[in-house]
Length: 322
Ligand code: ACO
Image (tube, helix red, strand yellow):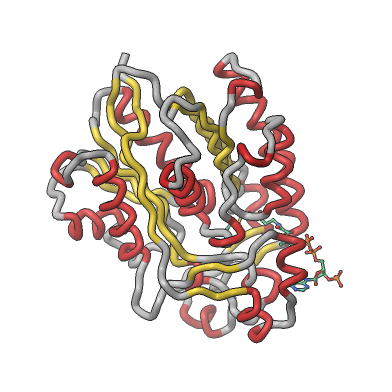
């Protein structure tokens, strides 16, 4: 049996930071409101001309190094992003050029905040079927480019960043199972209603930005993620007691708290980075994972529960032994 296992992780955040105090000067909000409702204190913002691929390159090089591999060992690139540098080529191909990798398959995944879970699930299947040995899996975003910085209901939530893992073939269990879902009937609750390229007028009218019915999204997210905990544990024949760490999508501390409770995990076993990063969409899970790996909290052999929920709606989970 071939398994896929996380061989290395990496992440990168742009230098520029917007604190809640900065946002108080931009829109009618307060640090207290943002902290109470979301837990967010600051978020990183890409500099002028800094792209999703730029952030991803740093995170990818760090993940490849941590895996003890070279770029020539990578034989698959799966790149999750909602904010690609260009319409085409895919950001995966742009990254492939930067890294000097020639030939292996490279493609983007668009599942908004669930993108990294989708990407790791796909890479896992390539490895388990023998189609790849070392897959570079990235979640990277420059969401600040599709945020309306005059809309207080959304602009306080999002940030930019990148996270990456190298998934390698192994004879020891790594990824136990992944579970992916989507339900397009909810598309109107969270979307960018116009295409930036297809309709430049929409950009000028403020329609090519994130629109969200936050309260409705919140309710569906909590219910849906609760269900996926049961689905994932049942599939593996495990219970809450078998999970060492929850590494959740970082949208809101209240959603994360509800999930931690559902898994009966004490708060110190839940990786929370939303206070420092905001919601970085597809980058949020790999960023949180790399943070907890590098600061020594997550150790080899521990069982991790990864989950995400995002626009579409899309949602998913990955259960793995690190
Ligand atoms: N500052 C101050 N007041 C604000 C702000 C702000 N930044 N934003 C909204 N308000 C006001 C509202 O106008 C409203 O005022 P009213 O009561 O007078 O009408 C009040 O605060 C409460 O607004 P709600 O929207 O009900 O606040 P809620 O507690 O639901 O928190 C939030 C809003 C943080 C957006 C929350 O609903 C949430 O986190 N939703 C889920 C987001 C999410 O998980 N997204 C998933 C993925 S994202 C992706 O896929 C790209």
